[in-house]
Image 1: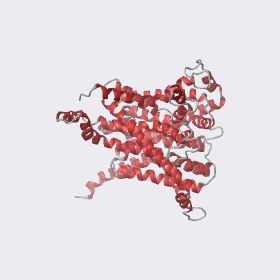
Image 2: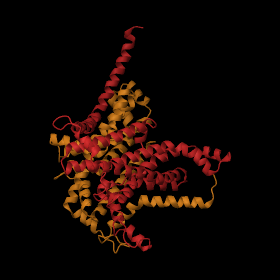
Image 3: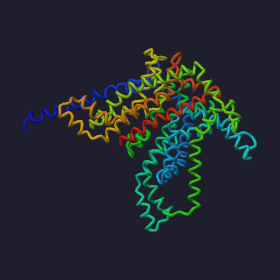
Image 4: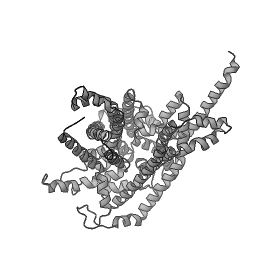
Length: 289
Length: 261
């Protein structure tokens, strides 16, 4: 085998690879300039304040304000994730099994809010849940309450609106997984004497688990980084991590503290994605968006 | 599978309630935008276009709207070719380098946006890009790229690449082969990606909060600051228009994609 016979194809392959890298370069450059460098800068800033220091991290882990905010954020994320699963699973099941036109109607009801601006929805929930809002009017008319409930400007309002915004991120991966489960398997289960509940528990549920994992991950991670909804519906008292970051910058000009909190949040998010990525490829998970 | 009537009815009722919860914001905002009073009472005392007049008559809202539209168009004009080129590279070269580049390109969907926002604010402060159109457009191109890339990569997956090879073996250069053979067949995916990038630019709030200002305030930034202070029904009319517009755009993008499939 002489070198000259391999060379042209190898050279061609090299050239092809170089061309593809060149084509991707402008897009990669934009991401590097506007995500990688800014985030890297923050990371550097979190440990550098006139010399190397871990003071900002020490404060995050010892001062109660930070600690409480992290605990609150994780608690809200957990609540939101469980609620979206509880609401999303039956909806995805119905969408995957209902006949036309019902399945189209169900999917339309999931997609319309999905494409509605987050600000628009936060506004709607403010209107619905305020003291003089429709929800309180109805509760009182039906005699369920005697005075208006505080459903907004607190944790409850934040959870109601966040669940609403993230429900499609649960329904869509669930739906696409459930759609691929062959109907015959359930029929086979039934023909072998399994009742509907038995077949569901032992056939359908395990097969839908990849969708469940994808939905849980997306919703949990997205809630960790939520900003607009808690800022508008939390009434200044439900201080989630991203609000701690922005306040440290906007109100107190504490760049080091903001950066350190941001880095911890980012590490949490990346760790969760990396852990789940071992089970489900990341691009499949993000493809749902 | 035969199930008795009662559990089926209960299940249907449950689904109905969840769907109402999903639709509630849209159901509440549209009537409110046509209400004659600033309070939401049922039934609304009278219908009026008062809040639409308020929106169209207010120079601040109009300026924000123009700014957002311009931002959306500029973002699409830059993000679409950049994203399409990257998607072409990703689907043609399945080597390790390109796979890791693909992951890098998806970073805007992974990194919490507040972290990106303050990072950008900090970098822009050094470069003098705060409160500039250039700065805003660049940030929105970054946010829009993953949408264009995801959509075009999906379109290229269902496209038979040998067609482009044939065109090239018949003497077309690569660019011409792409433009005359490949692009026409994936144009619906490119269009869908462009639409999603546009919607994301119009909707973006958090980065705009940090880097836009002065004469370059976007509509969403004005809405956010207005919402923080009070419940202003003008926002109901803006919200109705925004929802209708994004819904129409998505329908347009989807109908194009269906034809392609």
